[in-house]
Length: 371
Ligand code: HEM
Image (tube, rainbow, N blue to C red; front, side, top):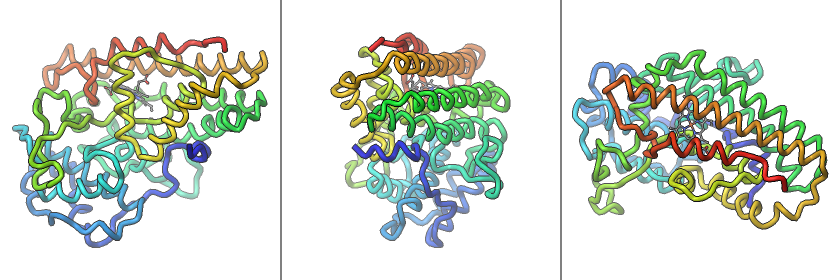
């Protein structure tokens, strides 16, 4: 298990802001996406793109940017037309598929593109701060869409602190309570960032203007049989079913569950969360699988003192507070909106789960086990 990742968190060290010149048409369309969507010009614009680009010279951070741009344009194509079609044209599908093969995750908008690789600092001379984040790519744009993503980015950035401290305590077996106290301070900061979601992301705007573009094609009534990626030989013309973008593809919470010994009995959300790992960057997926194995086999062997057990329980309480706030957002931003609104009334998450019941179950399971 490559546990070094925990030192820098799941945010990449290097984020590409612009692709080399062969991708100018993609960069241009992506930068104009809010206007193109407002004017309903996405079909014409996609048809003008060069298909099957050479991606062999792209670096890892460039591949991530290419994945981000193709994912945004393809989701705009899918959800930005009056009539939903079940085919992604070859101008997008061929290059998108090739990039996804290289990155080893499906050709669909994932959290890694939507949040982890989608930001830069407004003022590089100033320290990282929620107010100093700029979101690089939008669908429609606007403060609600930006803020929704900025909150995720700020949480990921702060999570470096808790993850590196818990690594020292549990994985390097330093067993010094100070690492747990640092972790506690960090998760309290994460919770205070989480609390700020309603400041600039309004539930109505989120539900009607932000969320519609991030849905996937699996378990989605709009695409019951999935979506065809035109010309992609490996798919043999068969429609594909991939899940949509969701915070459930963030590696922070599964890492905390494993490190702190929080377990969830089998249920559809747990199965779904396991499936979500396929949509994460490969090294994050491998790390989480390694952490789960460690949690099952080696966690109990640690000789933890009474004071540290108290701190671990305090940490679990903070994860409970996070899940509780999160459940409130799922209710206010999605469930309640769906009751007053006819626009996209399927009451499953963007990933496609009946979420209220199971988010609540996972919340109830976030309790100390007194190990
Ligand atoms: C308005 C804000 C938010 C809403 C409405 C929301 C909604 C949802 C929904 C409906 C699910 C259920 C699974 C699915 O369908 O994908 C989910 C799962 C999840 N979301 Fe969010 N989310 C929000 C913000 C966040 C933030 C800021 C994070 C932080 C990284 C996050 C992390 C997660 C995690 C980790 C799960 C898996 C559930 C668990 O392990 O308990 N979400 N979210």
